Length: 260
Image 1 (cartoon, rainbow, N blue to C red):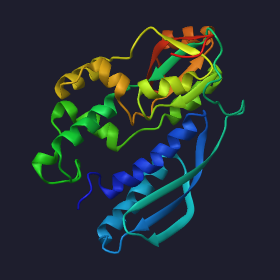
Image 2: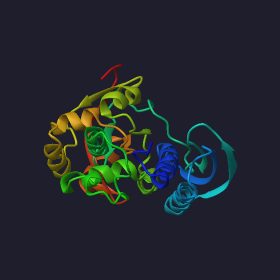
Image 3: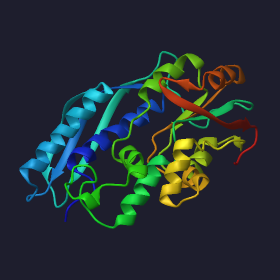
């Protein structure tokens, strides 16, 4: 059965997801190892597309693949391990914010989830970007959402630019705000004052027939950064509106109680 995601994008996304974990600690990836389990009947072209995906990802994210393993398996398996360097001030962790810190999120949370919703809706396989079948291509209003799902951009540039602002806690979004925000809160609460419903997300959600607020809360696969900074740093970031080429949205404030 054909996969819903081409081998090239599958490898690229596997590397991107790991790079995002390093960005979530305000670090930078350096080297990686790759383990591939390949079915006996996997076409050579698919193997070459896997290799191209790894090459594209390593160039895009500034790392080198230095080794790994290839073995035969019953189904295609891609396992990526990345090593990275923390900032000079040390790696950031989640659940370490202080009361009064400002809570920010980057980009367009919920956009990738809308792309996933479209892929689930069409109930067919075939690469949504390289298939020659017209029916496999998303409508114009949802094309960006599907692209964000299949080709995520870990916020490495934002992580580098964020370090001077001394974030007190940081994590990446992979399961949507509704699931990740309580994990992030940990020993403190987040008083949510604003949801990052951008004009782009609103248009895409309308095309998908989903309330934009629901898309933000319940989306996933975003790989945006969720972080806290001091109020002084927060005012600077809120005034700039962007950092490292990425839009920033203030969610609210960290409170000195547990919960959400």
